[in-house]
Structure formats: C-alpha cells, structure tokens
Length: 54
Image (cartoon, one colour):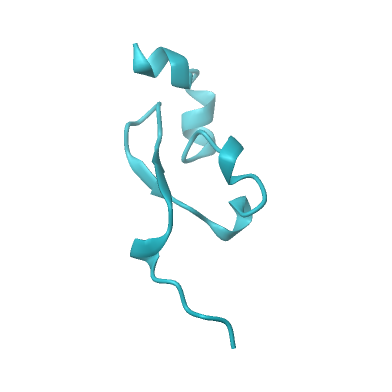
C-alpha cells in the first residue's frame, strides 16, 4: 500500500493572474514545473508571470 501524503505536504505555487496559492494536483504530475496558472480562467486573462512580477 502506498504511503499517504497530506495535502499540507504537497508543493504549491502562486498564480500570477489572481495571486492565490494553488497546490499540486495529480493531473499535473508530469509537468508541474511548467504549470503557471491555477485555472483556465486565469490562463485566459492574459497576465503573464513576468508582467505580474513588475
């Protein structure tokens, strides 16, 4: 049986569009490094990570 991982122990990032934290999800397992936005809605809003840092 696999070891259980608590939600609090999962890695998280901050969305540059809405500035909210979002946690790792199973569907992002293979490409977590390239995930930038928390949702499609934020991705479509047009703000980029470099623009949000300014």
